[in-house]
Length: 67
Image (cartoon, rainbow, N blue to C red; front, side, top):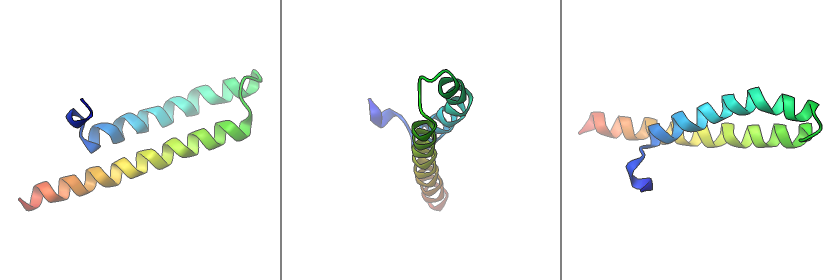
């Protein structure tokens, strides 16, 4: 099933997840349900994943334009 999703689909989803984490994690930290260190790390990790997929999507797009 994973082959059904393009790199652009994955990048868009990862970017939405970054925004979600940026909205939710501050509340979890303030409630003591998550440390700031973990929130920062988990958000940074998803930012890196989104960037990887965005690069892959850009490469896919460039290949498509060449064909």
